[in-house]
Length: 342
Ligand code: PLP
Ligand code: COI
Image (cartoon, rainbow, N blue to C red):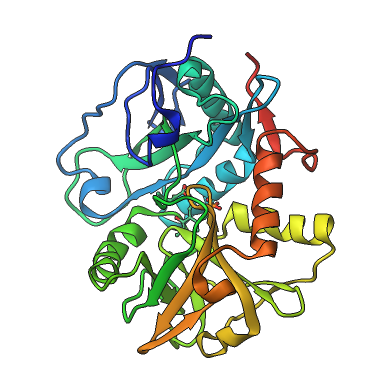
């Protein structure tokens, strides 16, 4: 398979049109059988719920090339389940898990020349999304849905890759206490544009959200969950109803426990007690693991490992183990990798 001609180490995290997408339509209470086509446009009614009322959700996962040439998807079943949690939160038609998995498989297989080669450091980002559409003006869920999946090769989300980022807390919330924070719905992301921009203008990489009810506990970053490593080598990550349940985070909890014998705690993490951590990181599909160098809160700059200038040893070994599992270099727990038969 001849690959497309790209400088894989330089591609960044941006949209690129690839050869095929997957698209399926739901109408009259049922999904059609879905197909691949070579488009990247959709035509929907101007009154569509996705456009006006935010009836839209999405997923993100990655495929990697293994050393032996296999192409591996990381935990796609978890994304299928999470998409349906989001669908239920917005009263949308659910996507059968088998359809989600088959669609991901088929669209990756059809775009093999876009899957970055082994060792390039890049991967194929897979973006499934579900939108409600159709003729409408009133505030009610759609009767028609589109489920589509496109893919594009990507490099690191944060431009410096595995290098410390610097965050600030924000007075804004991305989600309400009993709102849609735990669902991957478009509105949460729209709400994060302004606080993100304010953080960047103030000189930070991004902002980190506090719990929307009390503003005293860490929730997450707009693209990723938070974790900290304590002086006693405990992996700690926030428990909160308003954060997205990160598949990467749950995978890291497993790796910390099973590979490194670490204790793992999922619990509220006070923004006033960052001293308990020697290292901190942000984790997610796009972010992978990105070390957090510092968090600024109420004018106070808190630095993590090595004065915030480099990744700590635990963050580094978690990163290496996670990415080795994703590339099929060390055994993955049963069911974690889907092989795209080539
Ligand atoms: N939190 C938010 C808000 C996200 O958008 C993402 C990315 O999907 C994550 C966390 C990380 O989740 P995952 O590890 O499943 O990609
Ligand atoms: C992902 O990691 O898949 C995300 O959804 C982050 C994204 C908003 C770019």
